[in-house]
Image 1 (cartoon, rainbow, N blue to C red):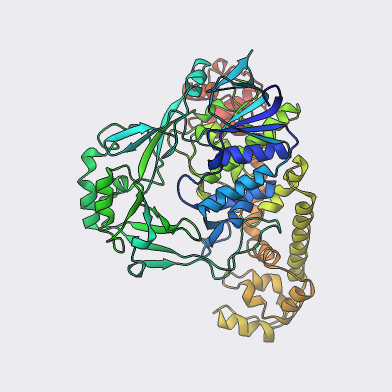
Image 2 (cartoon, rainbow, N blue to C red):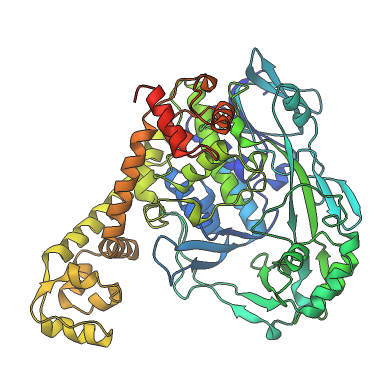
Amino acid sequence: MFDKIYDVIVVGGGHAGSEAAAAAANMGSQTLLVTMNLQNIAQMSCNPAMGGIAKGQIVREIDALGGYSGIVSDTSAIQFKMLNKSKGPAMWSPRVQSDRMRFAEDWRMLLEQTKNLDFYQEMVTGLVVKSGKVTGVKTSLGVEIRAKSVVLTNGTFLNGLIHIGDKNFGGGRAGERAATGITEQLVELGFESGRMKTGTPPRVDGRSLDFSKMIEQPGDSVPEKFSYSDITKPLQTQRSCHMSYTSTEVHNLLKEGFDRSPMFNGRIQSLGPRYCPSIEDKINRFADKDRHQIFVEPEGWNTVEYYINGFSTSLPEDIQFKALRAVKGFEKVKFFRPGYAIEYDYFPPTQLTHSLETKLVSGLYFAGQINGTTGYEEAASQGLMAGINASLKVREEDSFILKRNEAYIGVLIDDLITKGTEEPYRMFTSRAEYRTLLRQDNADIRLTPKGHALGIASEKRLRRMEEKLSKAESFVEFFRTQSVKPEEANPVLESKGSALIRQSDKMFKVFSRPNIGIEDVRKFVAVEDYINQNNLDREVIEQAEIQVKYSGYIAKEKNNADKLTRLEYVKIPMGFDYSQIKSMSYEAREKLEKVQPTTVAQASRISGVSPNDISVLLVYMGR
């Protein structure tokens, strides 16, 4: 091992590191995954769940490209929910509750079965960099392992500091030591670093809870699954989550510890995730609210441990305990472990290119929380892209870049490297201007051909996607060409309070009405016959329905995306000197000089760069 030169070394075995290692190895690169504890590969450090609003779309995209997160989410799921089903399909987001222990185990088993992948357990304390290029890593035992590229996925471990009330101690996670040495070396090399924080709630003994006082939150009656492959199957049985609420009494008990809270006494100054605030932060920021939701989530099929989602805190453990006992259903609660906050180093992602390679050191890639993101899904997608691009770099091939109109992953990476982030970045559907195109149902159609071309999505997956697309398109064409008579259509239309038809009309037109769904048109004999004769499954039927009902929106968004794509092809030369463009605003010149965008489209998305600045840039470039 130590005399071998690896193509790719991945540092860190979390969600980003696991996807990076799998992608690089599956592309044929000789890959080494180095992590501090092989027992904790792909550990769910926070909540035991995958997916959710926009995050579910990301998991589907990872799966479509050939990553493993979707498969493991299915094999370890204990509950499935499609969120936002009452809204349009652009907002539908799959989510699973996971068995925490099985999730990590399934990930490790998949990685151990992956060719070209080696493992090594130790702390990486530094990089070997020669003439501006990374050539390997150094470990705490003084071992030097050589590589042609390195992917850093250090999570919350870089100089991690855990806070519980007025106590603090070094650690990357509870019970695990922090990683040291890498930040200091990167700063010496010229990188800018910062500090962020995140938190986690208490874990409790489910045997001490009274679920009869809570609101049951069951999974979907007809559960789906994440992976587009036929490797996994939908759940047959599910475990319920439960919901309770805080109260004024709970808030008052929590406030008793505010003077000992590291958030309020100044010991934590770094920013935490805006959209996943601690309970003390919620009480402080939303003082007008007398209660907040608490979700009680099982950690697995058989364990009695529960995760208290919505009660993230770094308050002293005695305050946590006293306040939680005032929550309905928690009167006799027993703690497994208290909640805590953790501060860690990150590196502003404007120091990266779209491939996630650093601008300062060739062959060095960053992925996950080191880039200032939060969430398993955001980390996993970056890991996948970093692993792919590290392999392509070694093969001296062009980088693989996803555009904003191609994937949420493209939106995520473009946001990070173009705008940067000063607080933990979390993906939302609102961040994607083309979210009607970037739905969870069509991620395989968008991305499987790309994954297949890279060599990480199998031929079988590609053929399955092509069959789904062909059947859906044929079904849509059926609706365009087939007519329905008034005597068959009107009873359905009348039952839905929709205007009746007086003569035969195309089914497409009837189906396009906003209050008419697939179950309504299946009452037409010809539709049900077509479905049965062509053996159409749920995915095909759903895809056809979306294409019919949202065809106008989809066409409009594609047109807008095509306009943007034109600017994506207007390249800006490397090292372009913006200081010479005197008619551009000073702020724009300063921001452009710092980010060094590669295209005019990317330049237009930089905060502080106005449309007028872009016009000046285009004129100066002879456009």
